[in-house]
Length: 115
Length: 113
Image (cartoon, rainbow over all chains, first blue to last red; front, top):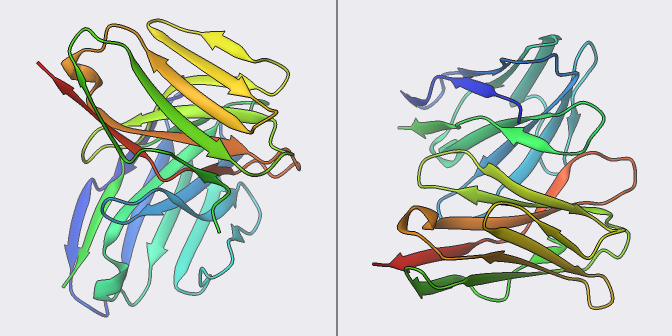
């Protein structure tokens, strides 16, 4: 399946700062990528769909001005958590869609801890 | 709320036994289902998928069964090994052209040596 990387793998930041997480498709061009958030011992919750060259589509309840998504190239999508607060501490995972199929392949995740 | 859920939060099996992880879904329009394995601190790993026009699909040591009548999905793991210990999620695609997945709540599989 597709190979996806994320950077950084973990990050600790102070409350009020912004954090950027990168998601890269390593083996093919991904026009669509997804961003999920996962709290401890919970399932994955979709935050937004990232479309190359256009605006991201956010799920209900996810603030687009707080979670900025940029998908400027076919191999890179970024998620920026702006003015992070402790409640934003979570495991953020991206995925990419393999071609015309609906199969999603996931990155290794980024652990964010906001102090 | 979530349209995909699981019957058992934790499943403990002996090494070598077969494991069965179940999942119920509520959206009858869903036409594509995937099972993922997630180890601690890692992203979900694709295991096997199945389309709604099938009721069974086999992979290496794994089998997925789909019962559309009762909206039930199961993952069978043969000869379970310690390396199979993880949280398993089922996920569905709603089949509305929206390509995102909805995930179930997950089942933790513990393999006893």
